[in-house]
Structure formats: structure tokens, C-alpha cells
Amino acid sequence: MSITVFFMLFMMTASSVYLILSSRYTDLLIGIALLSNAINILIMEMGQGEGADPLPQALILTAIVIGFALVAFLASYILFEVLRHKNDSIPTYTEEDV
Image (cartoon, rainbow, N blue to C red):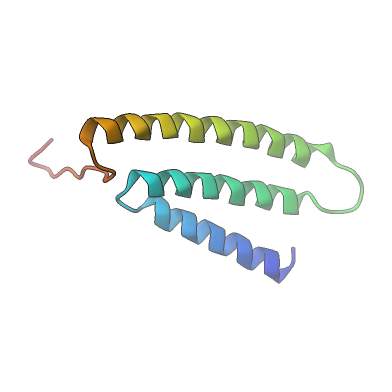
């Protein structure tokens, strides 16, 4: 794996973790989609080498389908929450609320 691809994967993963930890639903959705793509690129780069090994391709295809289903489900849930609460922020709870 070249240093350029490694740096790109690092930046994608760091950006996705930052977005997942933010306090908005849309940032959470974008962060999960970005992390899914970063993992797919990592699997693809690990599968590069001599010979033809179909296992990484099958793993990536399965991961793409699962990632798309997860993002679609999360998008519908986020739409439901935004329409219900009329804002995009994730509610925070304290110990007194529990």
C-alpha cells in the first residue's frame, strides 16, 4: 500500500470518526457512509497482489450492499426524528433524565 493511499484512508477514517461523534444527525449519516467507504477501500487495497483472489472482491461487494442498506435505514430514521423534533441535533441526556 502506497503512502498516498494510506494517508487518504487515515484522513477518511479520522473525518468519519469526527462526524460520527458530532451532535447532528446528518453528520452522523455522512460519517457512517464515509467510514463504510474507507473500509471498502482498505479491503480493496489489501487484496492487491499477485494472482487473482476473488475473496476481497466478494467481501467488498457484500460490504457495499450492507453499507447501503445501513445508510438507507439510518436516513429514514433520521428523517423520522427530524420531522418529529423539528431540529437536526441529537438530544443529550444527563443522569437526572434517566
